[in-house]
Image: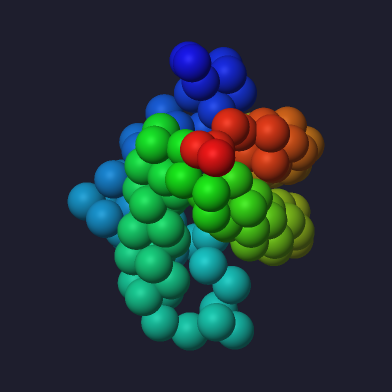
Length: 121
């Protein structure tokens, strides 16, 4: 049985994003709340988890849908922090501010698709 389109979208996004986290981690520093400290640890961990989740979804592992949803929720919290942070920065362009807020609702269908992903029985 083929994977649903939502699962395929998550797999594509997570493989691409996870790889990018590991290859070019500096791009993601602004997305990590300073209170967490050690940005590179969190960026690498996120990248590894995204790749693991993508592989888990592709191979229909029982743990993959829930872990993927959990990773997306953690990313969502970071995206909220980033949107609020750039909004208060007077030097941030309006385009970046609008983009950071527009991406927040996009996490909701990703979480739903993750939880609906098929698993092996």
